[in-house]
Image (tube, rainbow, N blue to C red; front, side):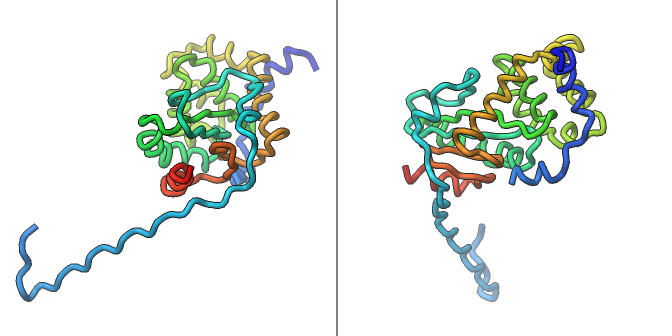
Amino acid sequence: MSVLIRRRSIISAMAVIPAAGILAACNGEEKKAETPETPAAPEKPKVEPPADQGSVDTAKLLADAPMEEKIVGEANAPVTIIEYASMTCPHCASFHNNTWPAIKEKYVDTGKARLIFREFGFDPRAEAGFMLARCSGDNYFAMIDVLFRQQESWSRAPDGKAALLKIARLAGFSQESFEACLTDQKLLDDVRAVKDRGANEFRVDSTPTFFINGKKYTGALSVGEMSAIIDSM
């Protein structure tokens, strides 16, 4: 297969709507005497940390990264959260949009934890989304935020390329820079290498998958669940 054909493949492949099966895998006043008192709201039960699915040595998890790591938080934070995600996975979008902001405020912004975000694209559109984020430079996480918030508008659009281009233009891409990013074979290979390493070395097979201080958890953890895990460490 020629290099030219390989470079076109990521764009032409976006014309195919990702299969539902792939997405699902990502697996006041004093009251009157006659007014009955309002019963007090029951206390919320304490959330116990979910069971982990094994562990991996943290040093191994952090070694030999195929690409520059994308990190939020302080390097010396006592808790390291590594997240493997796919841009077209609705469970990943749910975590990113609904859980991550609270975890970031509670733990990352206070120096208790840091997040290392890793690409695990299940399909060409997910890979394209990651490539555009990488091509955004310092705006990597801003691009990830937009793509997750608008996931439905581009991940299942009849024309994936046009839908992504519309979003990319708002992020400052031109037609030319958009095309150049998505025909960068080395970038595509590197994005795939991150996924391959996660799958082959750490047995990641669904998204989101988290390694929190080396302990493995799968699925879109709730704020309570992730808080319980971090608080137990």
